[in-house]
Length: 270
Image (cartoon, rainbow, N blue to C red; front, side, top):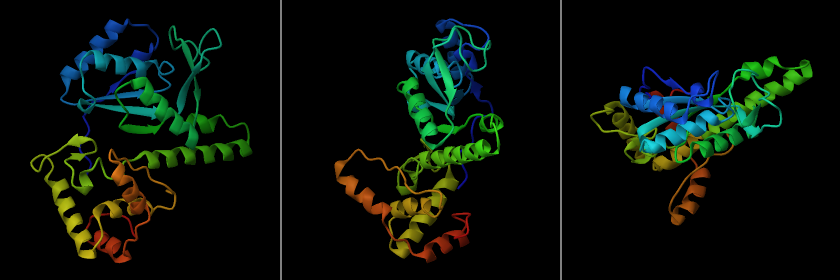
């Protein structure tokens, strides 16, 4: 299924982290406000490295002061640098580039590091969260290897980082695949995304033909990839906790995967 188109222009936030100059908070908020007026759905690109998390912090503060609801904005967070206390006269990363920071940042590229950066980034954003994530500066991380053994260890860290990204992906596409009306956290209609609804109708019909629930198929699809060993499932209802456990242990007929491939619903060979 095709992903919804992203805006043609996304807006970087390094300036919110005091890159080269230190704008006032009101100046930063004025920029964010103009971005929101310029495009229907704004996509802000940020990172824990930008001002040692200051850019994320200021972005969340500006959006809240402007009365922006979380579903009205998209935020991309490049993961791989985390905020730590500043113990030197100036930050240890990119000295001279960032102005008047109160914190430092260190590289954290590994499975655990990416998960920590993701949690820290969302905490800095306040009521908002990053819905698009990537790994920041993996080439720089590999390039800093001291020798071949160190390089091999860093390669393993990078693979772990991308495994973390895979586990952060939403299994049900924000609920759309199992009957909701939000796809990738954006509300859609048959008029706005006829392709998505057509895909879901074919998918639901196939699940019925094979006597399995769409939710179980979604969860088990993740486990077709050997790199994925666990999935995160959310619920607001205590009664669904046990059913979520059962989804992770469901058995899907191999013939269903073949039919989905034949009908163009998935693109991998099973």
